[in-house]
Amino acid sequence: MKNLTRKLAAGLILGFLVFIALAVLGDIRQVGEELAGFTWSLVPLILASTVFGYVLRFVKWHYYLGRIGVNNISVRESARIFVAGFPLAVTPGKAGEALKATWLKRAVGTPTPKGLMVVLAERISDGLGVLLLSTVGVFAYRQYWPIFSIVAGALIGVILISQIRPLGRWLIDFSRRIPIVRRVADPLSEFYEGSYVLFRPKATLIAVALGTVAWLGEGVAMYLVLLGLGVAPTTYTFGIAVFVLSFSTIVGAISALPGGLVAADGSIAGMLALLLGLSATTAASATLLIRFATLWFGVGLGLLVWLTASDLFAGEPDPKGA
Image (tube, rainbow, N blue to C red; front, side, top):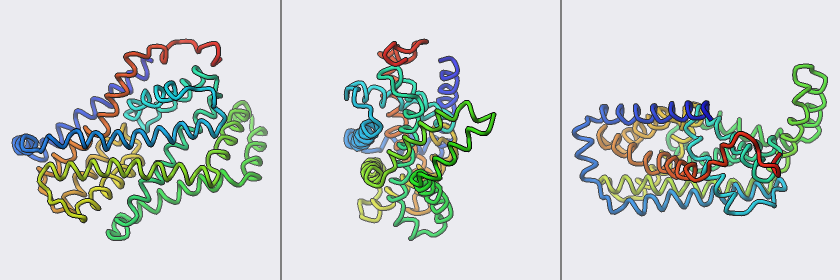
């Protein structure tokens, strides 16, 4: 818990520094004026768009649990674990999200490797979802093609390898012959079996479809933020809003920085200025608003769950999860 607290604190501090940096780069006084003139009546719609995305991502999470045979968990408990995982996004590389596998084991006895596979499958399906949303923009702006193609190739490669069963079983059997790896061969086997089930064609299509629509919700939130700052409500603005939010999510993910901080924020501000011709002040203001409405709103919801879920951080697992 102390280690987790340190990592979370580091993420929160970095987030604060990014906030200051954006405000300074956009001119603090002018950013303040932009925010004062923002159409705050749009905030409920912006947050509703974000929550819409969260709900669909939870449906995907719960669907994945069912795919690996976790049928003895209530929707409420599943949702509690899912939302409690939001603050873990601001740990380096989102590595803290692996804690959700521990919570699953504590709650219903799910083997940790299978729980980890669900967490990884979430990330991969989300990645494919934002890639799909970025496709049109990448073809229109070829300078973003290298990052797009590398990430797409890596994610699709993981899925394809997981489905070549003879190769997967051979790798597991080979690992048993290596002394330094032999002791984790059984967990690796469980991890592989989970990946094989979760990345079957039908499951992958369902998960990616849910992830795509979920992240589209955050793209809508980005569009509403731009409208609130006085940007013209055109189809082009909407398309750029979705592209910027999606592509910056990819950049933030591959940066491995807590919550994609710095990388995602810089991408959002830079792309808005480049593609929509926004001033540095307006781009910085839009970035601050959308990050509060997506990343930090989610972190806040998760921390509220933490306040009422001390059992998640208990030292010993529940007997039924041992």
